Image 1 (cartoon, helix red, strand yellow):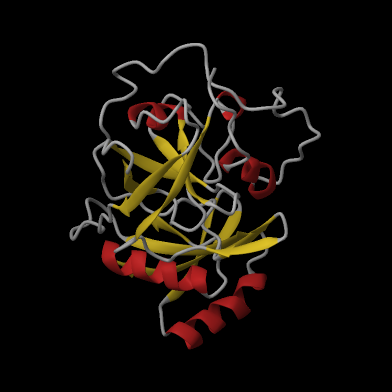
Image 2 (image 1 turned 45 degrees about the vertical axis):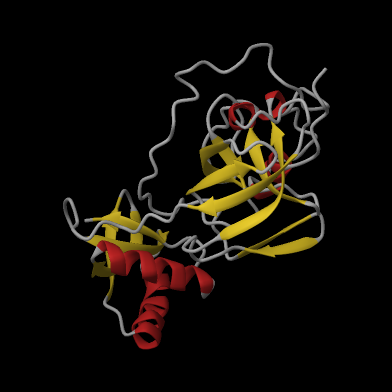
Length: 254
């Protein structure tokens, strides 16, 4: 019988997605393994690539179970060793912290600090096996664990029966492309129906950051945009803006 899973990544979905444990969202009281093993297609090696930061799950800090965690502005150079756990059927098909749907058969993971998404290489230090996973969730919120792996990733590392394993986690930092494929990149700060509410914020942004700040209308909303930028500049400014408290800043193409 497989070892019981510890409380980990999926628990934060209830908090970061503003859901309640009393809404019947999860029908299972305890997590467990599925009835089948992952298929070869589901275990195909991921090819790391550049992805912009998710609009959800990248707040500069968040609090779970009374403890506050500060997220990293970049994954570049990140290496960590510690204990890995895994989560499975209880959370299958439900939202991860960055707003995607959790697929327990895929190669994904939860991490407390890394930007979402981030590709990482996880090596099982007991047997030397490794797997590349895409971090799209927050957790595990257990003091002696550093990453929570999907069922599929744990299967590739041969750690299903033990439940946990000592691992090395190495971020595979992918820089943004040097050339934009199309259009110009802007950073949207907010969108409101009352354009006058943006005037003061727009002036503050211009004065504080010396950036071009404009408002544009779409679908009945007035959007505050900074830019234009190239991809490298946009990534750097999004990280800075989010560290300054503009958690909802994200890139748009105009």
